[in-house]
Length: 103
Image 1 (cartoon, rainbow, N blue to C red):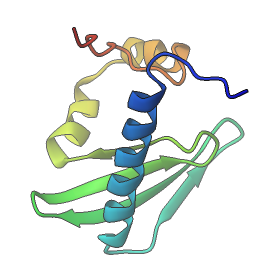
Image 2 (cartoon, rainbow, N blue to C red):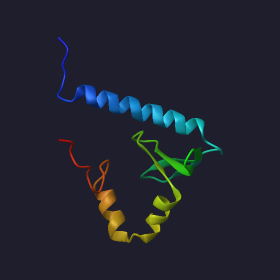
Image 3 (cartoon, helix red, strand yellow):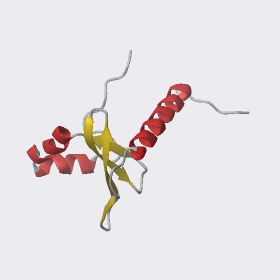
Image 4 (tube, rainbow, N blue to C red):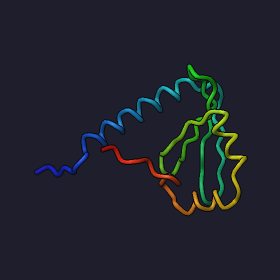
């Protein structure tokens, strides 16, 4: 007996797309990765060249999650205050503002 859940195929396809995108970004890395860590977290940061310009690829060693940010998205971090970061850290492994459900 094989267990399945509603949306399993959609989840699997999303995971395949994300893995392929990560592989593409890793192949486009232009420098050695920089590891930043403390007792709470460890991330690896890489500069990657994409067809739309330079981005930073940030990967979490603990969770395996990653994000690719462009210069404007990175600069937007400087516009935030401590409360914004506290809210993000307080809602670990989830976006601050969830994506809307597809109909």
